[in-house]
Length: 270
Ligand SMILES: O=C(O)CCC(=O)C(=O)O
Image (cartoon, rainbow, N blue to C red; front, side, top):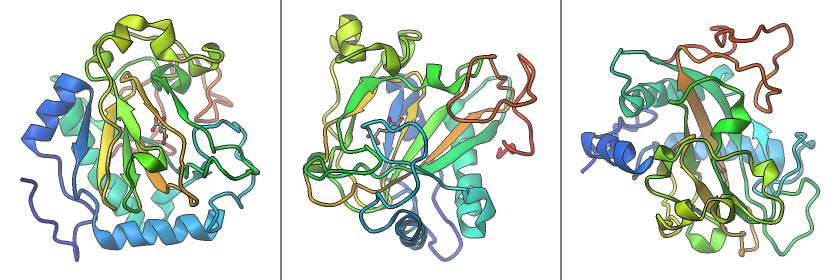
């Protein structure tokens, strides 16, 4: 069982050996009771303050896609949340497990409420999450990146929680979700569908799933009448470089092809 959290001092616990082994084998892991209740409450307060109780009152963030509405977290500028991100970096290093000892850097963080399918929304974000990989959208040159998806309340499949394709992280790069038309990765790569999808996750507030950016994942629509609040922290290997492609997740102005992500915007965490 995971160590009990010392909520007064620790924003989150560290991944266990079993969780590291699960991640290596399946490409994702569920981290029960990972984030302290105090930090979860703070994150939810920040999210609602910026996005409204409906999760849809922020300015459009540019992508307007069905999976979720989004708002940049800027967690590095908020001391208790920076503490969480730094601890996440330590766990990401254990999960990534680069034998050369290469560390981990911050990539981005954002709030991602999936909005109720039954309501008309301003910023989209109220559909299902088509099965996809993240890797190709990040315009980076190497594997090792991962997403910590933090549930800010208790959610089951009725809220549109994620399922993962175990082992898909070993199947290579399978294109951008922008190219699948009305279908998804599982339609374009039936051999990945054949691996089988996990059950949709059931989270208590503070539970986390972490998935490799090569792992196929998707989710149903949110069938409830309120947002499914999540806070996402993304990490990359410390030696990651920009691959020169237009980047959805960061501003490449002034950057050169094959340039390492800089320490100012993407500080090394572990
Ligand atoms: O929250 C969701 O439904 C999808 C999240 C996702 O695609 C991701 O974390 O990479």
